[in-house]
Structure formats: structure tokens, C-alpha cells
Amino acid sequence: MDAEANPPRQVLESKKGGQKPKMEPLLDGKDQNRYGEIWKAQFRSKSWTGSKEYAVELTTATFRIQGCEYEIEDIVGASLIDGGFCTHAYPLKACCGCWGKPDRSYTPLRLYTTDSKLAADWVKRINHLARGLPPTTEPVPDRKMLVYINPFSGVGQAPKLFKSVVVTKKSGQVEEEITKIDLDAYEATIIVSGDGLIFEYLTGIMNRSDWPQTIQKPFGVLPGGTGNGLAASLRNSSGEPMTPLGSAMLIAKGKKSPLDLLQFKQSGFPPKYGFLSLTWGFFSDLDLNSEVCRCCGTLRFECYAIQLLCNFKSYKGSVKYIKSIDKPSIAREEKLSAKGIRLLKEAVITSQPGSLPDSKLPEIGEDTKWEEVGADRYSMLLALNTSMQSEDVILAPGAKLDDGFIHLTYLQGHSCCSTLRALLRFEDGSMFKDPNYKRINVERVRIEPDKSTPSLFSLDGEHADDHTSPIDLTVFPSVLTVFTGGGATASR
Image (cartoon, rainbow, N blue to C red; front, side):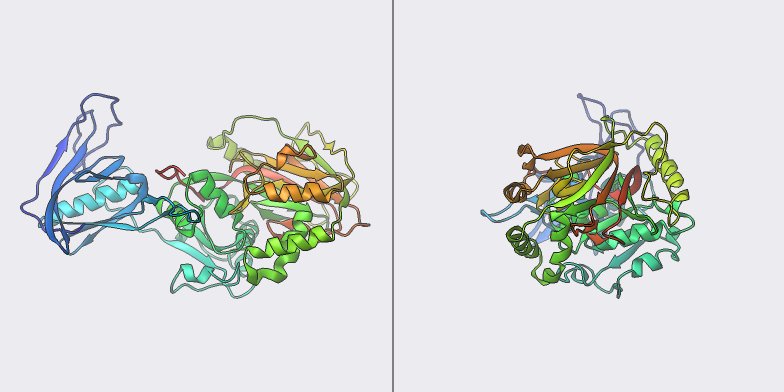
């Protein structure tokens, strides 16, 4: 919609009847009546058929133009243009055809007026509503982001998501550089990559002297890898489509949620930090060894899975854990985040090389009780922090970003058929129909592999320092902060 206007008029109305909305101040700073407000004005639009006058209405939830309604949740902001302003909307479009996927589509709403102050006031109001900020006379401040792009992740699509941005040139670059950067100069960090670069970022943050503050700095993810487990989990929890635009929408809206942090420890090595999972057995072999087929994209997993099934093997070892007490997620409460930081500080003190002896499990906190899984042979084992491992693989249905649990799932015994059935059910998370496929919510888990059967540990999709020695995994609740959303406005 485009426009020029007759003398425009703006009207403020009270809502009559129904539930009374929360009172908000007017743009001029004066108190308004207790029933809230609706902004109305007449603008003109321009198109190839000519110009037309429209009645436009703006509330705290919707933006209406002559019968067409756009949710504020689908609007990222507005900007002044020559003779008016443009509202930037990304409504969700339903999929087309059998193979289409729902996605957001950019819809510019251009409206024109001869009153420049009116246009500026509407731009301010829309920008504050879109960001969820209280209305003021000041414009929404610019957002300065630190952006890292991995040009080698996935099939090399990450650099195409941004223009004129310096990309990483070597493995470990982010982990090294992030220790020296003044993060206070940025609102957040944006990572355009698969899960590997996020793993580097978090481990680098924990190497900083001011990590108790910077570890809680918000970060966002744009999927540029093969698996994109965290990006998929964020979109899934927010109701966004599984597309890069869905991830970009979460960052643009600027809403934040807590995320649990994982710590991986092995004797003789500094700890590593992640957010996704620790896997062992069939799944880790598939994840790490299929790197040779990276050029095939996600097809690499299917191809290599066939090879592993044809040469199927099981894995010997012992698995111990501390079971979690099931409770409702209260991660949004400040006290749980503070608890996570406190426990993490205690863990960092005891995380010097060699602090994890082979003969004794380290304990954090009091009254810990270790239990052991009653099996010595496994087909696969996954200790999960998020619900999704990739955009089409659901490994922990119902898992929340901030539930404070490690979702320990495993397939015990030596069964190629059960493994194949599990792989086929990963897409909808129904693998738990197999009685041999178990799930336990735990706070900590320790895996001690039997050296007689070679195996690999995958830490957020990356290699462990040592694949033959025991590894200890601990979850710290609500330590991280990520961009998420309140959900898309259309059903999927």
C-alpha cells in the first residue's frame, strides 16, 4: 500500500466494555484515560491503479488497514519514507502444495501523508510496539550486534545470509578472539553457522575473566550449518517456521529467554561448554564420521547411516547418573538463574586439568546420589539439552530450553532392527514406543567407555579431547540468554 493525503486527522479513542487493558502513557507524555487507547488516522496509498484513502487503526496488538489486519507479533518495525512511512511486516504464509513449507513473507505497508510529524509519531509508536518497549517520545535505539559467520559450515551457505561482513577464517578463531573483545559495546552476539561455532563461542566466553557477566549476554542464531540443532529448537519453542527467516524474526523482535548450559569434563583436559548434547555410540559415529560427506548437506546422514547399519556394532561401557527431581520449569525466575551461576562458579573452581580422577566421581553440591544404568552394552546413547538435534530430528519431545534437565535417552543391547526403527521415528519423536529405548531426566551423567570397543564422543557435534577416557556432563540451569519469540500468529 502506498499514499499522499488530504489534511490527515488522528483520533484517539477509548475502548468500551470488555477487559480493561493495561494503561499506557500517550506519546506527548500526558496521562490517558484508564481504558487504554486506539490510534486512528486517514492515510493514502499509491499503486499502479492510482491513490486511495484508507482508514488505518493501530492498537497494542494489531495494525489494521481498511479491513486488512496484521498482528504486531508479525511486524519488526517502521521507517520514514519520502512523504510518509513504511511498516515492515512479515506475516506467516501457509505452505503451497504437498512439498511446500510455511514461511514468513516480507510485506511492506507504505502509507503517505503531508503531515511529517504525524508520520514520525506513528513510526515511533510502531517501533516501540514491535520491540515490546514502553511508548516514549524517543525513537527506538539502534541495535549494535557482533556477528560471526562460519563460511565452511554446512554446504557453505552461511556467508550468503549477510553482506559486507567479515567471516571466520580458521577453526578456533571465535574461541580465541571472543576472550579479547569488549562485549559491553554490543547488545548481543549473532552467530551465522551450524552448532559448532556456538560451541566455540561459549567455550571462549568461559575463558574470560569476566565470564559470570558475559556468559549471560544475549546471543542469537541464524542457521548456516547442516544440523542447526539449537536454531531448530529455538524456532520450535517459539512457533516459528523452520527457515532462516524464522530465525531472523526471533532476533529482530528481540525477545529473550533463558537456556541451560552444559559442561563437559574429562580428566587431564580443560572443561568445554555447550548447549546441545553429548552423544555416544551409533549416533556419535554417524555425526562425526559423516563429515567426509559434508558436501552432500543433510543427505550425508542418510548415506552414512546405511553404511553403519550394514556394519552394525554395539558399544560397551558403564553409564552413571544423578536423577533430577521432576518439577515445573521456573527458569524465568531470577533465583534459578542465580543458582545456575553459583553452581557454575563452584564447578569452575574445581575444573583445573586433572581434577576429575578416574576412580572417583566428583560431586557438586550436597546429598548427591549416583545411580547406574543396568546395562553394559548400548546401541546408542544421547544426553540432550534441547528438543531437536536438527531441523527434522526430534530426539527429546517436550524438552524445554530452560527445564534444568539433561534428557538421558539410550537404546540398550545389540539390536540393528531397534536402531533402524529409532532412526525412522526420529522425525516425529516416536522412538520411545520401543520398550528398549529409555529416557531419564538427570542432572549429571558420566560415561565410561570400554576400551575394547572403540567409540566416539560427540560434544554438540564436535570431537571430545579423548574418546577413550570417562566423560562427565553437568547441566547448569538458565545460565544462557537467547533470542526467542512468543510464537507465530498462524497455526502450523
